[in-house]
Amino acid sequence: MSSTFGELFRIHTFGESHGGGVGVVIDGCPPRIAVSEAQIQRELERRRPGQSEIVTPRKEADTAEILSGIHDGLTLGTPIAILVRNTDHRPASYEEMAATYRPSHADYTYDAKFGIRAPTGGGRASARETIGRVAAAAVARQVLDAYHPGIEILAWVKSIQHLAASVDPATITAATIESNIVRTGDPAMVEAMIGLIKAVRSEGNSVGGVIECVIRGCPPGLGEPVFDKLEADLAKAMLSLPATKGFEIGSGFGGTLLTGREHNDPFRMLEGKVRTTSNHSGGVQGGISNGEPIFFRIAFKPTATIMSIQQTVTASGEDAELEGRGRHDACVLPRAVPIVEAMATLVLTDHLLRQRCLDRA
Image (tube, rainbow, N blue to C red; front, side, top):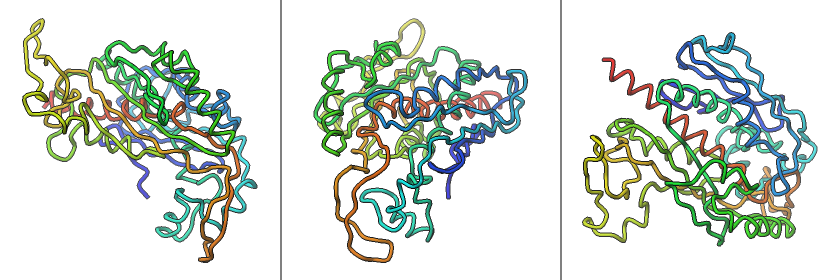
């Protein structure tokens, strides 16, 4: 099973949703980087369950335990291991799922691949696995701050089903995003989005939507030609997240409606730097950052577990019915915002370290 991400800044996540704990081993982090444990904890707080009335009520403190790789607040250059223990797991809620496949979950596909699976909470397929990613990205963020301060990575909820926010990627702030429990960048849409999530949850249903992300202050030159293009690695990072079903950068699919003359981003000199007058490229050209804001969006499907009876089959091949149990998000987007930021941070940190190697060659 592939549980490793990155080339120079590599992470290896481990653990199951209802096992003893989840976490990450970070390999390739440079030495002598100042790391704040409080900053790691803040990011875990942003993605933890039970944080508001519109997310899963599972109660987890998600307290990070740093087991290795950091001494007196500085990285040693050796592997950094971070563990978060599961304290509110309830495997009894999943007894029926041990023999019956949940529609649109990974139950059947894990059985088809491995012949065995962890049925409680989805095991490795659970979004709880992303704790390791967020913890690793909190360390990566501090690497970015040390080597290239000024890079800003912000994600927000653009839409939930048919409700769409109006957000300017050039001016959106973290304070605006974190000021509401939906984590949308448009205060005018907060109450409507909360109401929609509550309504579908009361019906035993779920809903999806779109998250947008902008990276501001990224230097030109990050990304590798051909297979490790910056947008290709961003796409892989985002589509590796649970419940994701689409990725587009810059003009995305909308760019297909434009002509070349309309879509091209003309160059100009501004304060001694090469800049563009538009940004249909989304900050990446030829797979390499051009210094403009990197802008992309990710589609998240409705949560697969719903509290309604659905048609399915058993592991022994018999038709059956199954009603969702346990504690789940009716909409994953509010808690997915910090996870999107985390994956973007990991990609940027990895490519920044790769570029530093090239610059020193």
